Length: 287
Image (cartoon, rainbow, N blue to C red; front, side, top):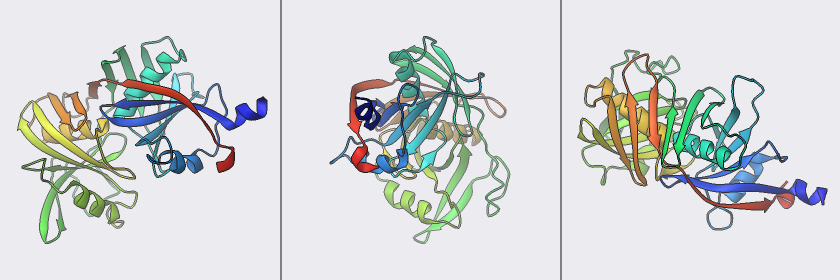
């Protein structure tokens, strides 16, 4: 029985506005070779299917309630996911890993407070945005600057914002007809600019309180929703004096509310999380 249990991994399938996840806790079960099994089980035809895998771990620092790891479906690890953070909070509460409704979690490079009011109202403190990038000497360093790149003989203007992970934000006239996959894949192939890849956000401004958003995530492609992308897009819009401090962000999978009061302030995101089902997988033949 012990040998079987070691080869069986329990998981939950969840989503935030259609951005779907497999969530695995590494507190009450042994989990190894995680990157090897991700590519197999992320396949939507032969596996479980998901955009990203979330791993729940104990924190070695008593300051934090949990340690939070995020893996794209190609096996690469990323360091922030807003929709995932809401699902993470709902998961640990559902599974009774905590009875707190306010939790403090740590990723590789980010600390986040999450307040779970109910599954439709989960507020995440996404931290302070970073608008200055020493790793990109090609670009000037002024926070308000818009940068340029040429794609197919056309100049594309964009902003750079990090919310734990890096986002390129492009303002478009029509969200329905913009070249999300073409531009997104092009920027991710430009290793001299973004050697670790980049999330590419396309925003159409409806009013100073509302935007439409589509996101091409590095290592995934276009997704139904992206919480950190929503935050980065609103931050960029505010720095350009196009948006107010509270903005409704409409994505393919639904809407989020993002709040930011300006430089040196935290970004807050409010939205839902859904638990779809629980299951288990046998991994012995894959490791």
